[in-house]
Length: 551
Image (cartoon, rainbow, N blue to C red; front, side, top):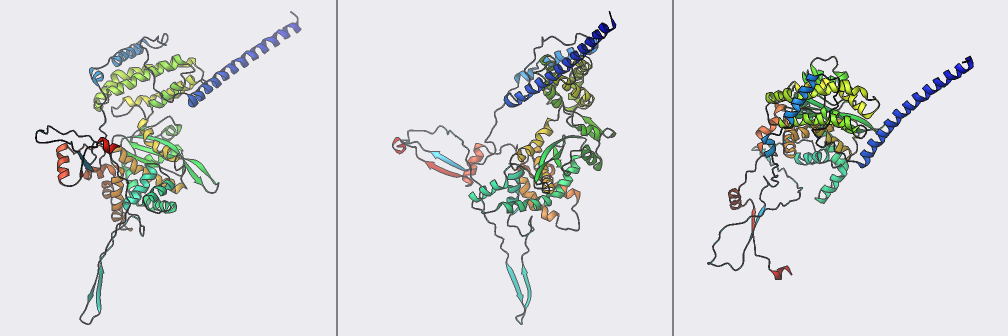
């Protein structure tokens, strides 16, 4: 072969190699684009549920190779125990909700039977109950203060006295505690913008403007600020908190547009307390790091896969991160269309972990930890081994590769939920707690400035804690807003922590058990009869409606 021919062969080999590399790159890129298209089509047209169908236990395993036999054996033994249904699970049935439980009887309508004489004997009464609504009423409360004068023998005024005015939440404001509570509840709990509230109030005969309602929110939030600060401190006294963050549009008046800022949530799981935190819209991990350091937090912190948490606590031995299995599962669920066999296998294993959690729901912390050690730990160890072997086969650019990378990099943190029985497998409760913020921004759209976002955190923290404690937030805010002017009466002296602690929802409810939403109904049919005799409900007697009357 001549030199020229050899050169041509070398050029062809090099060109062939370059083309093969380019084809491989294009195939990988095509696979990624097809995966993105499948994801976007599902977001637009497909189902949003992440629930996985029951996996066939006879499905072939992907572990024909390098995983240690003892790991596989432990996983299979745990799977057999998980799949075995307990008698309690078979007998479990849903109970119908008693929707009318606890509602007072407003009136009693007695339907008479025509043509009844002494030959008939009453054998009983059938009671049909229906729910009636009485629209809200707005009215005026008048404070009458009698004035007295004392005159001496010469007719000169010696003394003039008048009853002192009580302390009101907002000085020289026509709204009392109940109207202030209703306004902030409507906005931050029921997500009604102020202009809709103006319409509601006008239908009730109260001609108020939107600017007036807006002017009530700031002083009400500032009145509640001492309670909020005590609540934040109480949350970080816990040893197990869940954290999350969400976006809040905040108006930037210099740029004449709303910027996407971030609001943080911290939730004390065992104590069932909730607080929001806003630091000029920052999402940096330094925000949560500063909070935990300021309150000397020590314990577990459960969060999603946001890298800011890892950065914040990398060198902090007092805080142990626990990640969220729901976020890990979500990535594999999104990869189903791309690689169903691998994604479905991992989802099936995660499904077993959740079945263990369901079975342990009524157990004590120690019993739950024992069950996890026996059933969940072998599954977790086996999944890690699978990602270290089978997971290496998939490109990091594919959806299944990204899911494996996401899970494996957080698996050690995820394994920590096995260490204590009171730790949860996922961060779903924190996500549910932060959902009202997302609902709010779809209605009132944005906060006017950073200060307004701070007021929102105060109000939402107290309302959110009421939810955690199953407390009627209306009754709570009515009472607390009315009492706070007396607690903070001296501007030169801050109220004691004990005073403020007693006004937080979880302490306040101890002296106001009637405000608990899930309180059992106290009325029986006998009590209803007594109620009628005491004229607390109206009894109306009606004759039967005849055919002539109907016409």
